[in-house]
Length: 253
Image (cartoon, rainbow, N blue to C red; front, side):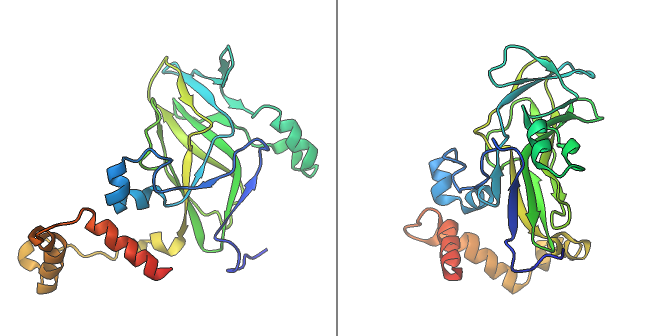
């Protein structure tokens, strides 16, 4: 069914009953942003809040032997289990009991190893669907402490037509040590992106000014306002950019 432009920009559909609700990302990264950056660095706080946090449906640990062996352990477990494809506990039976008969056998796995050594796919327990013409940028939450021993791939998914489980791919970078993924730490940040904003015609519409000798008077005036004028203030307040950005946002509200 064609989507209407009056629909929400993004809609989250729960798959795993235990999955925590997505949360709108906040400018403080859940209190982890340094106070000085929170007060004065609008670029950092704006990037931190640019989307929705989605959490793993449970805490777990991973361990990779550097070859073909990947192992996982649910939080609190006393033993490790070989990982190729693992369902969230009791989810397959739950999904089969509520899904249409032809769909029931196809419960998406919680964890899966990929062809590339040391790479896995982590499912969040949610589906994300966007308004027509919008996609979902999926990446590790910016300005959070990095997961130790694991890097994440970013992806752009056309979620206005692709209605499947929301996941992120990761590459394990340490061997023979447990890597903890906490249930209370965002696994990914999902940002709705208007598809026209990453089309080739827009991204290739670029001009490169190779030398300052080519700057116009307007360019020098902009540089003067940004860098020179604040230095000439007798009492220069901190966070001039952040203050101006906040004022612009308030005028737009």
